[in-house]
Length: 111
Ligand SMILES: [Zn+2]
Image 1: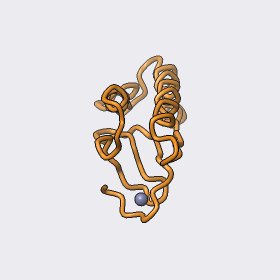
Image 2 (image 1 turned 45 degrees about the vertical axis):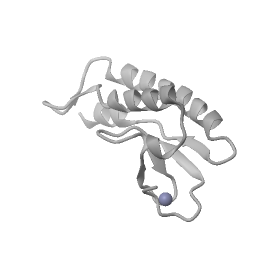
Image 3 (image 1 turned 180 degrees about the vertical axis):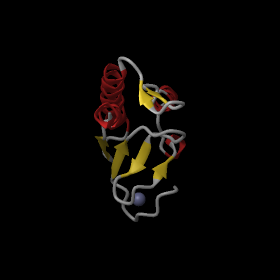
Image 4 (image 1 turned 90 degrees about the vertical axis):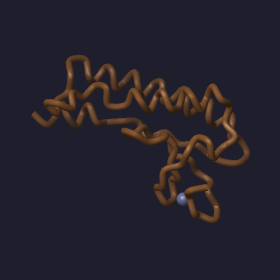
C-alpha cells in the first residue's frame, strides 16, 4: 500500500492525468486500483474513466474545446456512478467520496 496512514478509511475518487483515480483523503497520496480487491470490471472502468479526464481541454492551445463544459458534466456523472459501484465493493472497509472536476469551468472563466 503506497499510503502510509495507519488507518486508511476514506477513498477519494478524483480523475487526474496519468494516475489511477483513487487517492487517500487523509494524506492525499495516489493509490493504485490493484491495491484493493476490486472487481476487474470496476478497476478497468476506473482506469478508462481517468483516461478520459481532460479531453475537454485542447492542450496544444490550452483552451476549452466547444462543448467542453458538457463533456466535463458527463464525466462527472460517470464518476458518480463509479463511486457508487466502488462504495459497494469496499463496503465495510472504506468510505468513498467523489471530487467532481471543475476544470472546464475554470477554463471557461479564464477568458
Ligand atoms: Zn494516506
